[in-house]
Amino acid sequence: MTLAATRPASWILARVLPYIDRVVLNLTRSRQTATEVLTGLPVLMLTTEGAITGRRYRTPLVYFREDQKYLLVATKFGQRENPGWYYNILANPEVEVTIDGMTSRYLGNEVIGSDRSNYWEMAVAHYPGYLNFQRRAVNRTIPLLLLSPLEKTVDEEPE
Image 1: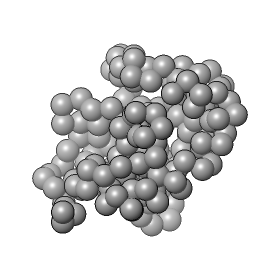
Image 2: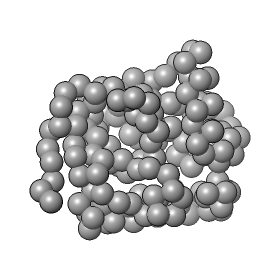
Image 3: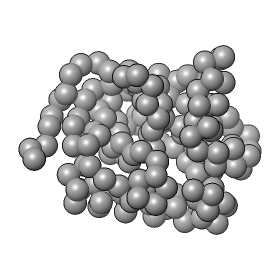
Image 4: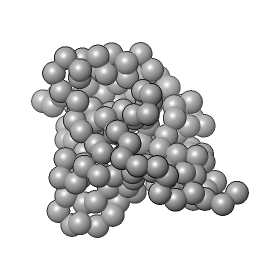
């Protein structure tokens, strides 16, 4: 996991890993990703509606679970701008999350204030590499988004 937080590895991973994860997710019916195998961190598939285009976008992301909610960390591997999915959630907070082949609807909200500090500490405890990403992000504070369930399962993959 430490290698992924280095500047060269982050540059490569930011450009390659999402594509590899999509392929592995498709091959395993949304049950496994390359990121999970390489880092041991859990990954979900987030489906958002584009803030500008209105198109649906599917993005594999590392997540942390708290009860029925999921925390997403918008690091973009420490790049200077926020990831597109972050803006999509701000514009259209109703999203779909697929984990282990099951898809459910969630409402995304940015975590701010003292709650943000608590969730940031939780994220860093799970993956200390976030500290390196924050240092490299320069003039931005890495956003945290909390996804809360809206309803029961939308779609299930047959076994």
